[in-house]
Length: 197
Length: 145
Image (cartoon, rainbow over all chains, first blue to last red; front, side, top):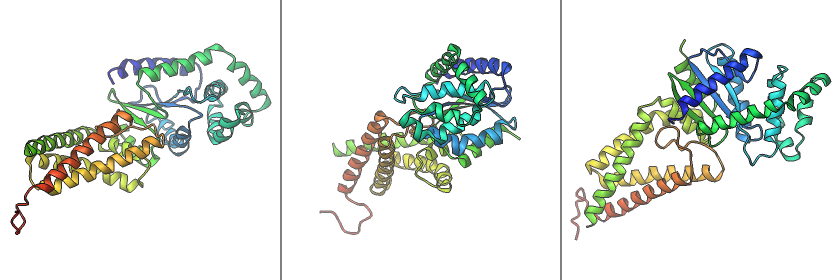
């Protein structure tokens, strides 16, 4: 737990500088928000799919996009998931074109298919135009994309993330880990008590 | 000798229940609700009800165990609660749920270590039940032989 504070400071620094350059959908909400959620997720993990579809999408819409908190997505592909890193690479590349949400939704929606047959590219292609596909492939080759994923993983390890999904909810400088799938009803009730009016 | 063992067991269990209650009561009850919710076993109304009441129940149980009153009944209650916790944790662990234990506040993953700890506490509670049942019941009208 003692490692959380410097790790969160580093995370804030990294995400604020990257969001200044692009309109990233991986970090939504004001940098100055009193509440920050660092979500560590793996596209190939079934619990991450459940959390994304049941809870995170609504938290993004109802809290982050309304400026009540800052939600930052971090990739944490687990070693036992052989296609997770490739999926994260394509999603990060799509983010550069403003297509992160569409690609992330598609990856989670069809997780059962591509996690078995490895058809990650096909799933991503289905939500992109031919031009975007070409650009995403180009961007995905950039070593900086993989380096960012690696940086996310290292950040998670410093924050003692041991499984996915893990959300670190920081409020008043105090980080509280929320591990596993939680329902929107319970999570939003908690968030409403800390985000203020 | 048996009485010393009983004293040690009820002090141990009482302290553990009081500490468990303290770790939950010092933080927002909704954080504990999130821990319960992550087990994905209860409907939302039950999650809220349990998160509101369980820490107080643990506190009362801990204090009464240390006080040594109604030991026959309280030892059964302690064993029952620990058996419930243990079975839920075992099911979740073997289901592969990467979640927090929620036993002593937030930030402790459900692991083989937490299962072992809860198993030892359950065994202690069962031993206390056995000892308490063997003691003469002061409330019974029938004198013990």
